Image (cartoon, rainbow over the protein chains, first blue to last red):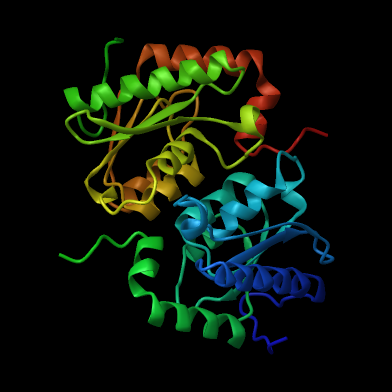
Length: 162
Length: 162
């Protein structure tokens, strides 16, 4: 497990287990030829309730970012307001919106150096955020972005050059 | 077709065709026992490229709001920045985020009286918005909310009472 440096609020041991599960999802997606971003949803004590990873390459679903896939996998439930969402990368504006819609009150992020999502929206809506800034998460994204820049741009909505 | 009163910018004839397709999707969802909200994605001239409706009841996918289902149905493409998204109801914060991620520049909404989504986010991010305030869309949602308040609260993330 990489050393963590938290911002805004510390990552608890339970939350670290959720982040570990998210990282395993990112590795799984990479092995499948997909975009290496993973998420896990669970209890504050680290009990994992659902996991997911980016599925753009695997299924062609452009809304299947890791966080959306994870929330989708969690199914219909009414306890969202008691859960923690962990993700290897800072959630984009869609995934931030999905978190806000479901009223998940706590988000733990692996890193926000290679991509900074809509963290301002979390702050504005009162979601508690921790950024672990894990070296393993940064390394995974840096390599992916260097090797597949066009796929990465597609995933974050950048129109094609020209 | 119901008479329209536009706000912010007028609904063009092409956009009205997209809104009509979205309304048909809402009726389809209602017939299936689902939440009656529909969307369509298309060209400014009214050519429909993809449609979708809420699927919470039909598939148990809580991220499958109409707009997300519609964007999902559109598949992997790079022309999002040239398209128009029409929806029978003001998009929630998740669907607003999905629209922003994909950089769809224009949103046409059937009504925002029964539910006001994250229209402030569209404005802040430069998305052009039109609200038709159609009587048929308002009537559809008013009846649904009156008949199925618990399902509606679930769909917009309200935790259970108690």
